[in-house]
Length: 276
Image (cartoon, rainbow, N blue to C red; front, side, top):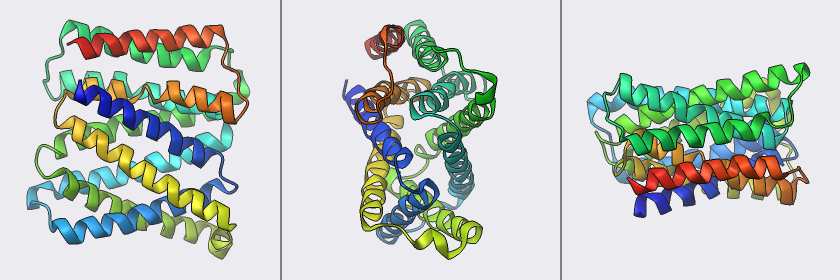
Protein backbone atom coordinates (compact mmCIF):
# COMPACT_ATOMS: atom_id res chain seq x y z
CA UNK A 1 0.00 0.00 0.00
CA UNK A 2 2.86 2.39 0.77
CA UNK A 3 4.39 1.73 -2.66
CA UNK A 4 0.98 2.35 -4.25
CA UNK A 5 0.57 5.70 -2.49
CA UNK A 6 4.14 6.78 -3.29
CA UNK A 7 3.86 5.95 -6.99
CA UNK A 8 0.47 7.67 -7.30
CA UNK A 9 1.97 10.76 -5.64
CA UNK A 10 4.81 10.61 -8.16
CA UNK A 11 2.22 10.37 -10.94
CA UNK A 12 0.52 13.58 -9.80
CA UNK A 13 3.86 15.38 -9.63
CA UNK A 14 4.91 14.04 -13.02
CA UNK A 15 1.75 15.25 -14.72
CA UNK A 16 2.23 18.63 -13.04
CA UNK A 17 5.76 19.26 -14.27
CA UNK A 18 4.90 18.05 -17.78
CA UNK A 19 1.99 20.49 -17.88
CA UNK A 20 4.36 23.23 -16.75
CA UNK A 21 6.77 22.29 -19.54
CA UNK A 22 3.99 22.23 -22.12
CA UNK A 23 2.66 25.61 -21.04
CA UNK A 24 6.06 27.33 -21.06
CA UNK A 25 6.47 30.46 -23.22
CA UNK A 26 9.60 28.95 -24.79
CA UNK A 27 9.44 25.16 -24.34
CA UNK A 28 13.02 24.43 -25.37
CA UNK A 29 14.50 27.15 -23.16
CA UNK A 30 12.20 26.18 -20.31
CA UNK A 31 13.19 22.53 -20.54
CA UNK A 32 16.88 23.48 -20.62
CA UNK A 33 16.39 25.49 -17.45
CA UNK A 34 14.50 22.57 -15.89
CA UNK A 35 17.52 20.41 -16.51
CA UNK A 36 20.08 22.99 -15.38
CA UNK A 37 18.39 23.22 -11.98
CA UNK A 38 18.27 19.42 -11.82
CA UNK A 39 21.98 19.33 -12.65
CA UNK A 40 22.82 21.64 -9.75
CA UNK A 41 20.77 19.55 -7.32
CA UNK A 42 22.37 16.42 -8.75
CA UNK A 43 25.82 17.92 -8.15
CA UNK A 44 24.94 18.48 -4.49
CA UNK A 45 23.85 14.85 -4.18
CA UNK A 46 27.07 13.69 -5.85
CA UNK A 47 29.17 15.70 -3.41
CA UNK A 48 27.28 14.21 -0.48
CA UNK A 49 26.97 10.61 -1.72
CA UNK A 50 30.33 10.21 -3.46
CA UNK A 51 31.30 7.86 -6.27
CA UNK A 52 29.09 4.94 -7.30
CA UNK A 53 30.43 1.36 -7.50
CA UNK A 54 32.67 0.92 -10.55
CA UNK A 55 30.45 -1.78 -12.06
CA UNK A 56 27.44 0.58 -12.12
CA UNK A 57 28.85 3.25 -14.44
CA UNK A 58 27.26 1.55 -17.44
CA UNK A 59 23.80 2.01 -15.91
CA UNK A 60 24.46 5.69 -15.16
CA UNK A 61 25.71 6.47 -18.68
CA UNK A 62 22.89 4.48 -20.32
CA UNK A 63 20.23 6.19 -18.21
CA UNK A 64 21.70 9.63 -18.95
CA UNK A 65 21.66 9.04 -22.72
CA UNK A 66 18.14 7.61 -22.61
CA UNK A 67 16.88 10.54 -20.53
CA UNK A 68 18.34 13.00 -23.05
CA UNK A 69 16.59 11.11 -25.86
CA UNK A 70 13.39 11.17 -23.81
CA UNK A 71 13.61 14.94 -23.34
CA UNK A 72 14.17 15.46 -27.06
CA UNK A 73 11.17 13.27 -27.88
CA UNK A 74 9.05 15.03 -25.28
CA UNK A 75 9.92 18.43 -26.69
CA UNK A 76 9.09 17.30 -30.23
CA UNK A 77 5.79 15.81 -29.06
CA UNK A 78 4.70 19.01 -27.32
CA UNK A 79 5.72 21.15 -30.27
CA UNK A 80 3.74 18.99 -32.73
CA UNK A 81 0.64 17.97 -30.74
CA UNK A 82 -1.72 18.75 -27.88
CA UNK A 83 -0.87 17.95 -24.28
CA UNK A 84 -3.94 15.77 -23.69
CA UNK A 85 -2.98 13.57 -26.64
CA UNK A 86 0.82 13.51 -26.59
CA UNK A 87 1.26 12.97 -22.86
CA UNK A 88 -0.94 9.86 -22.57
CA UNK A 89 0.48 8.23 -25.68
CA UNK A 90 4.05 8.76 -24.51
CA UNK A 91 3.24 7.42 -21.05
CA UNK A 92 0.90 4.65 -22.24
CA UNK A 93 3.43 3.05 -24.57
CA UNK A 94 5.85 2.31 -21.75
CA UNK A 95 4.03 -0.26 -19.52
CA UNK A 96 3.52 -2.79 -22.30
CA UNK A 97 7.18 -2.64 -23.28
CA UNK A 98 8.40 -2.77 -19.67
CA UNK A 99 6.14 -5.74 -18.90
CA UNK A 100 7.48 -7.69 -21.88
CA UNK A 101 11.10 -6.86 -21.04
CA UNK A 102 10.69 -7.66 -17.33
CA UNK A 103 9.27 -11.11 -18.13
CA UNK A 104 11.27 -12.10 -21.23
CA UNK A 105 14.64 -10.47 -20.51
CA UNK A 106 14.78 -9.99 -16.73
CA UNK A 107 12.82 -13.21 -16.04
CA UNK A 108 10.64 -11.56 -13.39
CA UNK A 109 7.38 -13.35 -12.57
CA UNK A 110 4.12 -11.42 -12.73
CA UNK A 111 1.05 -12.66 -10.88
CA UNK A 112 -1.98 -13.08 -13.19
CA UNK A 113 -3.77 -10.17 -11.50
CA UNK A 114 -0.77 -7.87 -11.98
CA UNK A 115 -0.47 -8.88 -15.63
CA UNK A 116 -4.16 -8.17 -16.26
CA UNK A 117 -3.80 -4.89 -14.38
CA UNK A 118 -0.83 -3.84 -16.52
CA UNK A 119 -2.81 -4.61 -19.68
CA UNK A 120 -5.87 -2.71 -18.45
CA UNK A 121 -3.81 0.34 -17.46
CA UNK A 122 -2.08 0.38 -20.83
CA UNK A 123 -5.29 -0.19 -22.81
CA UNK A 124 -7.06 2.57 -20.92
CA UNK A 125 -4.25 5.02 -21.51
CA UNK A 126 -4.05 4.24 -25.21
CA UNK A 127 -7.83 4.60 -25.40
CA UNK A 128 -7.56 8.07 -23.90
CA UNK A 129 -5.35 9.03 -26.82
CA UNK A 130 -7.20 7.56 -29.78
CA UNK A 131 -10.69 8.67 -28.78
CA UNK A 132 -11.29 11.45 -31.26
CA UNK A 133 -9.81 9.70 -34.33
CA UNK A 134 -6.48 11.39 -34.96
CA UNK A 135 -5.87 12.34 -38.62
CA UNK A 136 -2.89 11.90 -40.92
CA UNK A 137 -1.56 15.35 -40.11
CA UNK A 138 -0.97 14.14 -36.58
CA UNK A 139 1.22 11.19 -37.65
CA UNK A 140 4.55 13.01 -36.95
CA UNK A 141 3.30 14.03 -33.51
CA UNK A 142 2.06 10.50 -32.75
CA UNK A 143 5.37 9.03 -33.93
CA UNK A 144 7.27 11.41 -31.66
CA UNK A 145 5.07 10.48 -28.71
CA UNK A 146 5.48 6.73 -29.32
CA UNK A 147 9.24 7.17 -29.66
CA UNK A 148 9.21 9.04 -26.37
CA UNK A 149 7.31 6.14 -24.81
CA UNK A 150 9.95 3.69 -25.96
CA UNK A 151 12.70 5.75 -24.34
CA UNK A 152 10.64 5.83 -21.14
CA UNK A 153 10.42 2.04 -21.21
CA UNK A 154 14.15 1.77 -21.80
CA UNK A 155 15.24 4.04 -18.97
CA UNK A 156 12.65 2.48 -16.64
CA UNK A 157 14.29 -0.92 -17.12
CA UNK A 158 17.80 0.51 -16.70
CA UNK A 159 16.77 2.42 -13.57
CA UNK A 160 15.02 -0.63 -12.13
CA UNK A 161 18.23 -2.64 -12.43
CA UNK A 162 20.50 0.15 -11.21
CA UNK A 163 18.73 0.92 -7.92
CA UNK A 164 19.34 -2.65 -6.78
CA UNK A 165 23.10 -2.17 -7.20
CA UNK A 166 23.67 1.23 -5.53
CA UNK A 167 21.95 3.71 -3.19
CA UNK A 168 19.03 5.53 -4.82
CA UNK A 169 20.38 8.99 -3.92
CA UNK A 170 23.78 8.17 -5.44
CA UNK A 171 22.17 7.04 -8.68
CA UNK A 172 19.84 10.05 -8.79
CA UNK A 173 22.70 12.46 -8.19
CA UNK A 174 24.90 11.20 -11.01
CA UNK A 175 22.10 10.84 -13.56
CA UNK A 176 20.65 14.27 -12.79
CA UNK A 177 24.04 15.94 -12.79
CA UNK A 178 25.09 14.46 -16.13
CA UNK A 179 21.83 15.03 -17.98
CA UNK A 180 21.18 18.32 -16.21
CA UNK A 181 24.40 19.93 -17.41
CA UNK A 182 24.44 18.28 -20.84
CA UNK A 183 20.92 19.31 -21.92
CA UNK A 184 21.42 23.10 -21.50
CA UNK A 185 24.75 22.93 -23.36
CA UNK A 186 23.08 21.14 -26.28
CA UNK A 187 20.25 23.68 -26.37
CA UNK A 188 22.70 26.59 -26.15
CA UNK A 189 24.70 25.16 -29.06
CA UNK A 190 21.50 24.74 -31.08
CA UNK A 191 19.78 28.06 -30.31
CA UNK A 192 22.61 30.35 -29.33
CA UNK A 193 22.32 33.11 -26.71
CA UNK A 194 18.68 33.79 -27.61
CA UNK A 195 17.75 30.87 -25.39
CA UNK A 196 18.96 32.86 -22.38
CA UNK A 197 16.34 35.61 -22.78
CA UNK A 198 13.50 34.31 -20.64
CA UNK A 199 11.02 36.41 -18.60
CA UNK A 200 11.46 36.21 -14.83
CA UNK A 201 8.14 34.37 -14.42
CA UNK A 202 9.22 31.73 -16.94
CA UNK A 203 12.51 31.26 -15.09
CA UNK A 204 10.78 30.77 -11.73
CA UNK A 205 8.27 28.36 -13.30
CA UNK A 206 11.07 26.31 -14.86
CA UNK A 207 12.98 26.12 -11.59
CA UNK A 208 9.85 25.04 -9.74
CA UNK A 209 9.11 22.44 -12.39
CA UNK A 210 12.61 21.05 -12.03
CA UNK A 211 12.14 20.46 -8.29
CA UNK A 212 8.76 18.81 -8.90
CA UNK A 213 10.32 16.61 -11.60
CA UNK A 214 13.16 15.47 -9.34
CA UNK A 215 10.86 14.60 -6.45
CA UNK A 216 8.61 12.59 -8.79
CA UNK A 217 11.59 10.69 -10.21
CA UNK A 218 13.06 10.01 -6.77
CA UNK A 219 9.77 8.60 -5.49
CA UNK A 220 9.59 6.20 -8.45
CA UNK A 221 13.19 5.06 -7.95
CA UNK A 222 12.42 4.31 -4.29
CA UNK A 223 9.28 2.39 -5.31
CA UNK A 224 11.33 0.29 -7.75
CA UNK A 225 13.35 -1.02 -4.81
CA UNK A 226 10.14 -2.27 -3.16
CA UNK A 227 7.90 -3.51 -5.99
CA UNK A 228 8.11 -5.39 -9.30
CA UNK A 229 9.32 -3.31 -12.24
CA UNK A 230 6.24 -3.79 -14.46
CA UNK A 231 3.77 -3.00 -11.67
CA UNK A 232 5.57 0.21 -10.67
CA UNK A 233 5.88 1.25 -14.32
CA UNK A 234 2.15 0.70 -14.90
CA UNK A 235 1.11 2.63 -11.79
CA UNK A 236 3.47 5.42 -12.75
CA UNK A 237 1.62 5.89 -16.03
CA UNK A 238 -1.62 6.73 -14.23
CA UNK A 239 -0.23 10.25 -14.29
CA UNK A 240 -2.24 10.62 -17.50
CA UNK A 241 -5.47 10.70 -15.48
CA UNK A 242 -4.13 13.66 -13.56
CA UNK A 243 -2.76 15.08 -16.80
CA UNK A 244 -6.23 14.89 -18.37
CA UNK A 245 -7.68 16.78 -15.41
CA UNK A 246 -4.95 19.42 -15.68
CA UNK A 247 -5.54 19.67 -19.44
CA UNK A 248 -9.27 20.20 -18.94
CA UNK A 249 -8.91 22.74 -16.12
CA UNK A 250 -5.90 24.78 -17.22
CA UNK A 251 -5.67 24.26 -21.01
CA UNK A 252 -9.40 24.08 -21.77
CA UNK A 253 -9.08 20.63 -23.40
CA UNK A 254 -12.07 18.32 -23.65
CA UNK A 255 -12.59 15.40 -21.25
CA UNK A 256 -15.87 13.79 -22.36
CA UNK A 257 -17.73 10.56 -21.38
CA UNK A 258 -15.62 8.24 -23.55
CA UNK A 259 -12.41 9.51 -22.04
CA UNK A 260 -13.96 9.11 -18.60
CA UNK A 261 -14.66 5.43 -19.42
CA UNK A 262 -11.07 4.97 -20.58
CA UNK A 263 -9.91 6.54 -17.32
CA UNK A 264 -12.14 4.10 -15.40
CA UNK A 265 -10.38 1.21 -17.19
CA UNK A 266 -7.08 2.60 -15.91
CA UNK A 267 -8.45 2.77 -12.36
CA UNK A 268 -9.60 -0.87 -12.64
CA UNK A 269 -6.06 -1.82 -13.62
CA UNK A 270 -4.68 0.05 -10.61
CA UNK A 271 -6.99 -1.85 -8.29
CA UNK A 272 -5.88 -5.22 -9.70
CA UNK A 273 -2.22 -4.30 -9.35
CA UNK A 274 -2.61 -3.00 -5.80
CA UNK A 275 -4.47 -6.11 -4.61
CA UNK A 276 -1.55 -8.43 -5.44
